Length: 146
Length: 146
Image 1 (cartoon, chains in turn green, brown):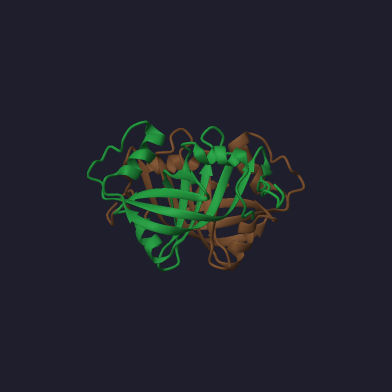
Image 2: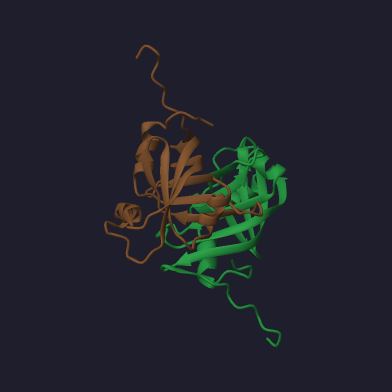
Protein backbone atom coordinates (compact mmCIF):
# COMPACT_ATOMS: atom_id res chain seq x y z
CA UNK A 1 0.00 0.00 0.00
CA UNK A 2 1.30 3.46 -0.82
CA UNK A 3 2.65 5.64 1.94
CA UNK A 4 3.21 8.79 -0.14
CA UNK A 5 0.65 11.56 -0.64
CA UNK A 6 -2.50 10.47 -2.47
CA UNK A 7 -2.90 11.57 -6.10
CA UNK A 8 -4.99 14.66 -6.95
CA UNK A 9 -8.19 12.73 -7.71
CA UNK A 10 -8.11 11.17 -4.24
CA UNK A 11 -7.31 14.50 -2.60
CA UNK A 12 -10.40 15.91 -4.31
CA UNK A 13 -12.47 13.03 -2.97
CA UNK A 14 -11.06 13.53 0.54
CA UNK A 15 -11.81 17.26 0.49
CA UNK A 16 -15.50 16.75 -0.35
CA UNK A 17 -18.26 16.21 2.24
CA UNK A 18 -18.39 12.52 1.48
CA UNK A 19 -19.73 9.49 3.37
CA UNK A 20 -17.11 7.93 5.62
CA UNK A 21 -16.84 4.82 7.78
CA UNK A 22 -14.35 4.61 10.66
CA UNK A 23 -13.03 1.39 12.17
CA UNK A 24 -11.59 1.11 15.67
CA UNK A 25 -10.64 -1.78 17.95
CA UNK A 26 -12.49 -2.52 21.17
CA UNK A 27 -10.41 -3.35 24.24
CA UNK A 28 -11.39 -7.04 23.83
CA UNK A 29 -9.97 -7.04 20.28
CA UNK A 30 -13.36 -6.90 18.57
CA UNK A 31 -13.68 -4.60 15.57
CA UNK A 32 -16.13 -1.70 15.51
CA UNK A 33 -17.22 0.32 12.48
CA UNK A 34 -19.50 3.34 12.27
CA UNK A 35 -20.54 5.98 9.75
CA UNK A 36 -19.05 9.38 10.51
CA UNK A 37 -18.37 12.88 9.30
CA UNK A 38 -14.71 13.74 8.81
CA UNK A 39 -12.43 16.56 7.69
CA UNK A 40 -9.31 16.05 5.60
CA UNK A 41 -6.96 18.81 6.66
CA UNK A 42 -4.30 17.92 4.13
CA UNK A 43 -0.80 17.09 5.37
CA UNK A 44 -1.86 13.43 5.74
CA UNK A 45 -4.23 14.25 8.58
CA UNK A 46 -7.94 13.55 9.11
CA UNK A 47 -10.11 14.99 11.89
CA UNK A 48 -12.97 12.99 13.36
CA UNK A 49 -15.33 14.45 15.92
CA UNK A 50 -17.51 12.58 18.39
CA UNK A 51 -19.87 13.11 21.23
CA UNK A 52 -18.30 11.94 24.52
CA UNK A 53 -20.86 9.10 24.63
CA UNK A 54 -19.61 7.44 21.44
CA UNK A 55 -18.00 4.06 22.04
CA UNK A 56 -15.24 4.69 19.53
CA UNK A 57 -13.86 7.50 21.68
CA UNK A 58 -13.03 4.98 24.41
CA UNK A 59 -11.62 2.59 21.82
CA UNK A 60 -9.27 5.28 20.51
CA UNK A 61 -8.12 6.11 24.03
CA UNK A 62 -7.12 2.49 24.60
CA UNK A 63 -5.77 1.76 21.11
CA UNK A 64 -4.86 4.53 18.65
CA UNK A 65 -5.22 2.34 15.54
CA UNK A 66 -7.85 3.68 13.15
CA UNK A 67 -8.84 2.97 9.57
CA UNK A 68 -11.33 5.00 7.56
CA UNK A 69 -12.88 4.56 4.14
CA UNK A 70 -14.28 7.57 2.30
CA UNK A 71 -16.76 6.90 -0.51
CA UNK A 72 -17.55 9.26 -3.35
CA UNK A 73 -21.10 10.45 -2.62
CA UNK A 74 -21.88 10.54 -6.36
CA UNK A 75 -20.49 7.11 -7.19
CA UNK A 76 -19.14 4.97 -4.42
CA UNK A 77 -17.07 2.99 -6.92
CA UNK A 78 -14.51 5.70 -6.25
CA UNK A 79 -13.22 5.37 -2.72
CA UNK A 80 -10.12 5.83 -0.62
CA UNK A 81 -9.12 4.06 2.57
CA UNK A 82 -6.68 5.48 5.09
CA UNK A 83 -4.83 3.61 7.81
CA UNK A 84 -3.54 5.71 10.64
CA UNK A 85 -3.05 6.49 14.28
CA UNK A 86 -4.86 8.84 16.61
CA UNK A 87 -2.14 11.41 17.22
CA UNK A 88 -4.25 13.70 19.41
CA UNK A 89 -7.57 13.31 21.23
CA UNK A 90 -8.83 16.60 22.61
CA UNK A 91 -12.01 18.25 23.87
CA UNK A 92 -13.76 20.68 21.56
CA UNK A 93 -15.39 22.82 24.26
CA UNK A 94 -16.54 25.73 22.09
CA UNK A 95 -17.68 23.35 19.29
CA UNK A 96 -15.28 24.97 16.82
CA UNK A 97 -14.31 21.66 15.23
CA UNK A 98 -17.79 20.11 15.05
CA UNK A 99 -19.28 23.37 13.73
CA UNK A 100 -16.68 23.56 10.97
CA UNK A 101 -17.25 19.89 10.08
CA UNK A 102 -21.07 20.24 10.25
CA UNK A 103 -20.90 23.23 7.90
CA UNK A 104 -18.98 21.08 5.40
CA UNK A 105 -21.88 18.62 5.33
CA UNK A 106 -24.99 20.65 6.11
CA UNK A 107 -24.02 24.28 5.58
CA UNK A 108 -24.99 25.01 9.19
CA UNK A 109 -23.55 24.88 12.72
CA UNK A 110 -24.05 21.68 14.65
CA UNK A 111 -27.59 21.61 16.01
CA UNK A 112 -26.88 20.31 19.55
CA UNK A 113 -25.19 23.20 21.36
CA UNK A 114 -24.83 21.10 24.55
CA UNK A 115 -22.72 18.41 22.84
CA UNK A 116 -19.75 17.16 24.88
CA UNK A 117 -17.62 17.37 21.75
CA UNK A 118 -14.29 15.58 21.23
CA UNK A 119 -11.92 15.68 18.28
CA UNK A 120 -9.56 12.91 17.20
CA UNK A 121 -6.69 13.91 14.96
CA UNK A 122 -5.66 10.92 12.86
CA UNK A 123 -2.23 10.84 11.26
CA UNK A 124 -2.38 8.79 8.04
CA UNK A 125 0.34 6.16 7.59
CA UNK A 126 -0.88 4.34 4.47
CA UNK A 127 -3.75 4.52 2.01
CA UNK A 128 -5.28 2.61 -0.85
CA UNK A 129 -7.86 3.81 -3.32
CA UNK A 130 -9.88 2.89 -6.38
CA UNK A 131 -11.32 5.04 -9.12
CA UNK A 132 -12.63 4.10 -12.57
CA UNK A 133 -12.23 0.39 -11.73
CA UNK A 134 -8.51 0.62 -11.14
CA UNK A 135 -6.32 0.94 -8.05
CA UNK A 136 -4.67 4.32 -7.63
CA UNK A 137 -0.98 4.91 -7.04
CA UNK A 138 0.81 7.51 -4.98
CA UNK A 139 1.69 10.71 -6.76
CA UNK A 140 5.41 10.90 -7.40
CA UNK A 141 7.41 12.52 -4.64
CA UNK A 142 9.51 15.46 -5.81
CA UNK A 143 12.89 14.19 -6.96
CA UNK A 144 16.11 15.36 -5.32
CA UNK A 145 16.75 17.85 -8.12
CA UNK A 146 13.28 19.41 -8.17
CA UNK B 1 -25.21 -3.12 21.37
CA UNK B 2 -28.20 -5.25 20.40
CA UNK B 3 -27.66 -8.91 19.64
CA UNK B 4 -31.23 -9.71 18.53
CA UNK B 5 -32.52 -9.46 14.96
CA UNK B 6 -32.42 -5.95 13.50
CA UNK B 7 -35.75 -4.11 13.16
CA UNK B 8 -37.61 -4.11 9.81
CA UNK B 9 -36.22 -0.74 8.64
CA UNK B 10 -32.66 -2.04 9.05
CA UNK B 11 -33.51 -5.32 7.35
CA UNK B 12 -34.79 -3.30 4.40
CA UNK B 13 -31.54 -1.34 4.32
CA UNK B 14 -29.50 -4.56 4.49
CA UNK B 15 -31.46 -6.15 1.64
CA UNK B 16 -30.82 -3.25 -0.75
CA UNK B 17 -27.74 -2.94 -3.01
CA UNK B 18 -26.19 -0.37 -0.73
CA UNK B 19 -22.64 0.90 -0.25
CA UNK B 20 -20.71 -1.10 2.32
CA UNK B 21 -17.34 -0.87 4.04
CA UNK B 22 -15.67 -3.93 5.59
CA UNK B 23 -13.03 -3.83 8.31
CA UNK B 24 -10.55 -6.63 8.97
CA UNK B 25 -7.40 -6.97 11.07
CA UNK B 26 -3.97 -7.46 9.53
CA UNK B 27 -1.69 -10.06 11.10
CA UNK B 28 0.36 -7.22 12.67
CA UNK B 29 -2.78 -5.88 14.38
CA UNK B 30 -3.26 -2.98 11.97
CA UNK B 31 -6.80 -2.25 10.85
CA UNK B 32 -7.83 -2.40 7.20
CA UNK B 33 -11.03 -1.04 5.66
CA UNK B 34 -12.30 -1.27 2.10
CA UNK B 35 -15.47 -0.59 0.13
CA UNK B 36 -17.22 -3.77 -0.92
CA UNK B 37 -20.35 -5.34 -2.31
CA UNK B 38 -22.22 -7.63 0.08
CA UNK B 39 -25.31 -9.79 0.32
CA UNK B 40 -27.49 -10.02 3.42
CA UNK B 41 -28.91 -13.53 3.37
CA UNK B 42 -31.09 -13.03 6.43
CA UNK B 43 -30.60 -15.33 9.40
CA UNK B 44 -27.93 -12.93 10.76
CA UNK B 45 -25.55 -13.76 7.92
CA UNK B 46 -23.74 -11.58 5.39
CA UNK B 47 -21.81 -12.81 2.35
CA UNK B 48 -18.74 -10.96 1.09
CA UNK B 49 -16.95 -11.98 -2.08
CA UNK B 50 -13.38 -11.21 -3.05
CA UNK B 51 -10.84 -11.89 -5.71
CA UNK B 52 -8.06 -14.14 -4.36
CA UNK B 53 -5.65 -11.19 -4.64
CA UNK B 54 -7.50 -9.04 -2.10
CA UNK B 55 -5.56 -8.46 1.10
CA UNK B 56 -8.60 -8.86 3.29
CA UNK B 57 -8.93 -12.51 2.27
CA UNK B 58 -5.61 -13.24 3.98
CA UNK B 59 -6.63 -11.16 6.98
CA UNK B 60 -9.83 -13.19 7.38
CA UNK B 61 -7.90 -16.46 7.15
CA UNK B 62 -5.65 -15.38 10.03
CA UNK B 63 -8.33 -13.63 12.12
CA UNK B 64 -12.06 -14.17 11.58
CA UNK B 65 -13.11 -10.88 13.19
CA UNK B 66 -14.99 -8.66 10.75
CA UNK B 67 -17.09 -5.52 11.05
CA UNK B 68 -19.13 -3.99 8.24
CA UNK B 69 -21.10 -0.78 7.90
CA UNK B 70 -23.86 -0.52 5.31
CA UNK B 71 -24.96 2.99 4.31
CA UNK B 72 -28.30 3.88 2.76
CA UNK B 73 -27.44 4.80 -0.85
CA UNK B 74 -30.16 7.48 -0.84
CA UNK B 75 -29.22 9.07 2.47
CA UNK B 76 -26.22 7.80 4.33
CA UNK B 77 -27.59 9.23 7.58
CA UNK B 78 -29.32 5.88 7.78
CA UNK B 79 -26.77 3.15 8.37
CA UNK B 80 -26.26 -0.14 10.10
CA UNK B 81 -23.05 -1.68 11.41
CA UNK B 82 -22.58 -5.40 11.97
CA UNK B 83 -19.91 -7.08 14.08
CA UNK B 84 -19.28 -10.71 13.28
CA UNK B 85 -17.04 -13.62 12.56
CA UNK B 86 -16.08 -15.31 9.31
CA UNK B 87 -17.83 -18.64 9.76
CA UNK B 88 -16.86 -20.03 6.33
CA UNK B 89 -14.32 -19.03 3.70
CA UNK B 90 -14.79 -20.95 0.46
CA UNK B 91 -13.89 -20.81 -3.21
CA UNK B 92 -16.59 -19.73 -5.64
CA UNK B 93 -15.26 -21.63 -8.69
CA UNK B 94 -18.30 -21.25 -10.97
CA UNK B 95 -18.79 -17.58 -9.90
CA UNK B 96 -22.28 -18.35 -8.60
CA UNK B 97 -21.89 -16.11 -5.55
CA UNK B 98 -20.18 -13.16 -7.27
CA UNK B 99 -22.66 -13.30 -10.17
CA UNK B 100 -25.62 -13.21 -7.79
CA UNK B 101 -24.05 -10.32 -5.86
CA UNK B 102 -23.06 -8.44 -9.04
CA UNK B 103 -26.65 -8.76 -10.32
CA UNK B 104 -27.88 -7.14 -7.08
CA UNK B 105 -25.73 -4.10 -7.81
CA UNK B 106 -25.44 -3.90 -11.59
CA UNK B 107 -28.19 -6.14 -12.95
CA UNK B 108 -25.56 -8.18 -14.79
CA UNK B 109 -23.15 -11.08 -14.22
CA UNK B 110 -19.68 -10.21 -12.99
CA UNK B 111 -17.61 -8.98 -15.92
CA UNK B 112 -14.33 -10.80 -15.21
CA UNK B 113 -15.05 -14.47 -15.98
CA UNK B 114 -11.47 -15.45 -14.99
CA UNK B 115 -11.84 -14.14 -11.42
CA UNK B 116 -10.37 -16.40 -8.72
CA UNK B 117 -13.49 -15.83 -6.64
CA UNK B 118 -13.78 -16.44 -2.89
CA UNK B 119 -16.76 -16.06 -0.60
CA UNK B 120 -16.67 -15.21 3.10
CA UNK B 121 -19.75 -16.05 5.10
CA UNK B 122 -19.95 -13.71 8.11
CA UNK B 123 -22.08 -14.63 11.08
CA UNK B 124 -23.35 -11.47 12.78
CA UNK B 125 -22.95 -11.30 16.57
CA UNK B 126 -24.00 -7.71 17.26
CA UNK B 127 -25.22 -4.68 15.37
CA UNK B 128 -25.93 -1.00 15.84
CA UNK B 129 -27.80 1.33 13.54
CA UNK B 130 -29.11 4.84 13.09
CA UNK B 131 -32.05 6.14 11.14
CA UNK B 132 -33.81 9.52 11.30
CA UNK B 133 -31.16 10.81 13.74
CA UNK B 134 -31.87 8.20 16.39
CA UNK B 135 -30.26 4.89 17.33
CA UNK B 136 -32.31 1.83 16.46
CA UNK B 137 -33.23 -0.95 18.88
CA UNK B 138 -33.61 -4.66 18.29
CA UNK B 139 -37.07 -5.83 17.34
CA UNK B 140 -38.71 -7.67 20.23
CA UNK B 141 -38.11 -11.39 20.29
CA UNK B 142 -41.29 -13.47 20.30
CA UNK B 143 -42.40 -14.07 23.89
CA UNK B 144 -42.67 -17.57 25.34
CA UNK B 145 -46.45 -17.61 24.82
CA UNK B 146 -46.43 -16.44 21.19
